[in-house]
Length: 299
Image 1 (cartoon, rainbow, N blue to C red):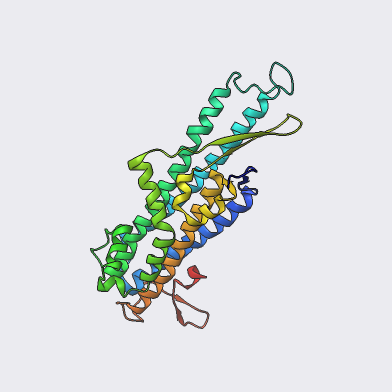
Image 2 (cartoon, helix red, strand yellow):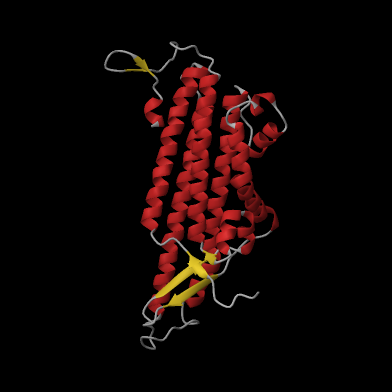
């Protein structure tokens, strides 16, 4: 049956609140991966110098920070576009006249339709990289020294293929579930962007009743929504904005990365190679008792 009423818009209504929540999750991830580094050096490698581990840790942090910055740019420039649209409402022809094809307006529409979506694409590229990095980190811990250049899809293949070291690791189930429920969709859309075609959604502007303010909305495409079942379900009743989708993707990514870290920590504890008491970095409590140096980072 043909829809008779227009779809509502699903956008981020409280940018500050959503960003604060995402940043809290990112800080939690950062602390946990530092803690995992202590666990790795104290229980697996037995040495202070673990350059590849630190390289992956810093690379993931860089990608997540980059995504937050790109979202900031997307939101900032969308605000500027809205300001330009609003300014056109008080043009040289007087208040209340909106010059759709007036001076500078074609530039606003060009930026809304092309330049803003490219920031969203960049967020997707950065997010997929974090999972390739995590594939290498997982292989380093579960596969052993010298076997760490394994990307995410290769890690999934090892687990599904029955590789003993991978299928018996505690992280295996989390990796497969995360891949099926989210990462495969993320990789699928990135592949579409790189190999098939650009995926540029539409936009619309809404002018208030007083003809004094314009609000701009930038939307994801149906092609994008097909990759993500949760968003597709929302998309049946709503037009989903780039901002809403970006926060969704970043949050899902950080949540899954934290789940993987928690499993890797358990795996390290079970398969530790450095005997207890031989840790190279440690803390003591007020009674002089040795405590795990990584513990504060996992709280």
